[in-house]
Image (cartoon, rainbow, N blue to C red; front, side, top):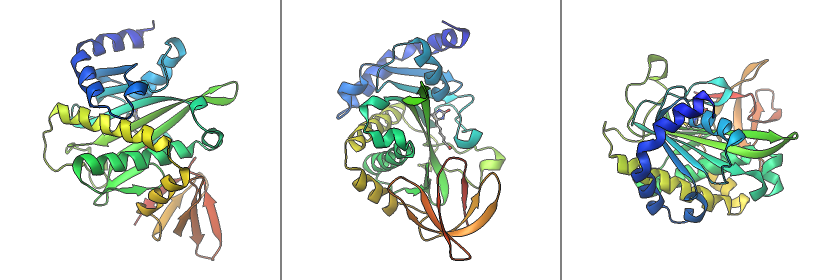
Length: 279
Ligand code: BTN
């Protein structure tokens, strides 16, 4: 056991009651997830923890890691994800790529797309709030980002063998750092939330996620598009080499964004290294 794991062991000890509560709340995913749920008071990042832990621990498909606080929460493109104590849900789920059809491994964006639909459904069910999806991995409420999804592949002999799917949902976070104040928001306007609710929301998300993974991909994609806050809008595309404005016109079955440039040409954008701004 290395130093990081030793520290992690100490932080997770006191949460057996919360783990049992979460298991009781699971409906569809009980068989998959109650084999291994780990809850930390605080950790650097649940994604980082899981990515390291799978090297030494025999963690099964569906292992869930939740932290009440992350000190180094991570987002796409090397960004940070602000994760203060007990105001959000910070959760990572381990997925075994063998449990998925080939199209997922060929096209890992489908994990993010499915998760975005599943988290939106869970929010609708638990909070009766309709959120919008900003391609590719963010959920928005009233023009502010309230949730980010980070799917990271673990390679074995050059192939994706496991996926760590991280979900960060701001429930009642208000004190965002200055640089996030205009961009980030929370699901609820009030400042306190019962910890039971956070676990109920986690259970709903897990249930919706595994249900969505078993659904027809076309159905998931059409729901993703229906809830998109990007299609039909003029957006700014930022790649490693250029920045330009274009009109977002569609999302392909593989999750690529189709944009029409000012000169009328259409381009399909892979989420990889692209950042997108809404006006
Ligand atoms: C993004 O905004 O680009 C994605 C944010 C993903 C945040 C979640 S919180 C749980 C998990 N642990 C992390 O460090 N990141 C993900």
